[in-house]
Length: 494
Image (cartoon, rainbow, N blue to C red; front, side, top):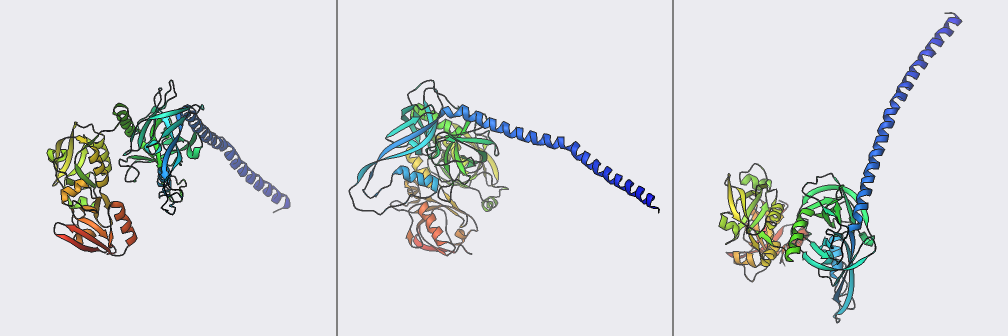
């Protein structure tokens, strides 16, 4: 091939390569508008979300209040007794009691202590929702608004079992927050927490609804918490959890933490639907009236469901029926599985307990249950729970110890009378799973556990601490029943 021919072929090849290159460059350039458009759209969405947060904060902040509480406590000169506010602070935000100081037999002195929290105005004439642990048993409650005004508040009513409280300030034409519907919120929705963490007035944090219906958290007697990862810290207690429409869906109450109280992305709020019911009763009567059935219930495990011939674990198992109660009068029996109340499905024991408690006494409700594999419906007239019953209910709630296969409850006057354990102390076995470690060891419902590993136990908490200390080592129970007292050994490792 001549030199001119080779030069011509080289030029053709170069032009081909350049043509291909320009083709790809043109394709990239033509595609860039789509990429740029997508980026612009994403940025615009973020701007809109930010504007939504800003709008809610602007509208809601004037109705969120800073609460300062003062109380006089008795205390020795060397801090022999801690303030209940400080104890509550450590309990709710550090998950443990506060530090204990050496005790000296000194004469007690009076000391003024302060605590702080949040709240939000729900009526134009000054009614405010907050937490019981913020204002309960306070000598003086001071409320400060965003505009700087301060008022001395009156405590209208408190409900320790749900940790809801209502206070009031003497003012008119106040900014208010609208109450939403906590039943309608979904896991994954955006929510905003407003409050005064560490005294930093009107702090806004954002997150999502992480879970609904959280119970067995150990914060209150009646639990149905909304879990959120919106940052909640000490001082947020009593403040509102708000949706993007600016409506309150919960009352911020506590956090879960293992590192000395630091934020770990798990906060709990009382559903506003529960708080509405409590608020109405506190306003109208000054106290809360609850309904009761008169049963001890427990969640179904897979083993229990199988033993009762059930296809799933939906519903709750009746482990006891108290004499002369609405449940007994209606015909509910031990071993029944309650699957719905008033047409509403029962998911677990906590939800059933909450529903019954919120039912107006005197109301007749339909209870659907499964007995011996057959479905049936009974009409039960809910009766009023007395203060003694409330205390008994709180102390006798069964604590599920699934690893051992049993449930226990603190012995109280009602259980003592039922089982013949007057003048005794300990925990009563309220349920035992078939083929469990406890069952194989001979433990049966109705037995009273007085000691664990030769140490007396007076309540469920002490019982749990004793088990935790035992670890995987064999556990020695000292038990009393109708036959007398005897020891039972359980090896959790087998």
